[in-house]
Image (cartoon, rainbow, N blue to C red; front, side):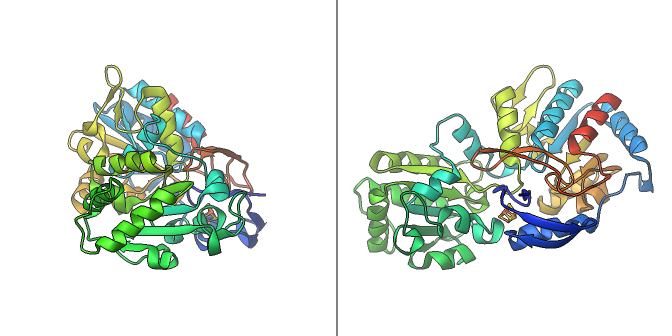
Length: 406
Ligand code: SF4
């Protein structure tokens, strides 16, 4: 069996036949996973320095020179890197005395950090499959982003205590600003909130659970929801970017609600993380520094929002982006700022970010062309082998060579 590193579910039941690097036949891949496998022969990155084709050695040497010569370098990305490459990245950040950060600093890092600090209850996807009876998807649309989430774990499967599956044993509730594909499955369990209305909804639900009349239009529906959540035997909340972005840096209302839910019932949280090894980076950095992102190794270990990419771009003078495409996702003014900073891009494929980089260094796709290990978004560790022959270097080797070149 092969793994899929197309998202943070890290599906481990993939069967695949190749003809060279081209996929001939597969079993169990979702459409996103299939596109991930098919991408092996599409738009691969080539080594280059200043737009001119170079050898890997020349690119690595230029990357080392650029980072060593910078006063305030930033090492960013890491969610699509193996655990070994993430550890090597932290060693490089220490050597440079630089800042290291990942996209969780502007998404779900606060939720993951609370889980790692054991201030927010969590569990594994296998617990979800076996025991969960009520699942809330909050600002989260796994039917689109993690297509096998509902079929492998959270809604459709039979489990140890959930033999009758979704027909009788499971209920899905979706809180979102639009009727997403996941919300369509939840049918009458869909609660539409206005953009930015998450904190208000959380507070209304808190009031309901506390026995008060909620200040919402449809009081009856909110009271029914409160009753349903109280009766849950093994409740889950899956959080998505919608929740994190709506509440910005202040998730207190959400955290208080989870606390309240655990006074009257039992609820755990698993964030639905995008890149396959986001949890791996957050946990590796947390084990080392006590923080999941936005860490500076300049003169000791410091942590704070000023070391998150959104703020640090104002002062940094060189960036290395590994396995990420921030120029495609950051707001335009930030993306523009990033594109103007001398940049090294390490990636398997061409992206908007690699196109803006001064130095590009290609790597093999982890789990397909290179072995390694990672953590699913529930924190369960997996180890994978390469399933197809490739001349691309594994990510860890490239990061180690850049470290030597610094
Ligand atoms: S759900 Fe994610 S890990 Fe599973 S096959 Fe689809 S893309 Fe790959």
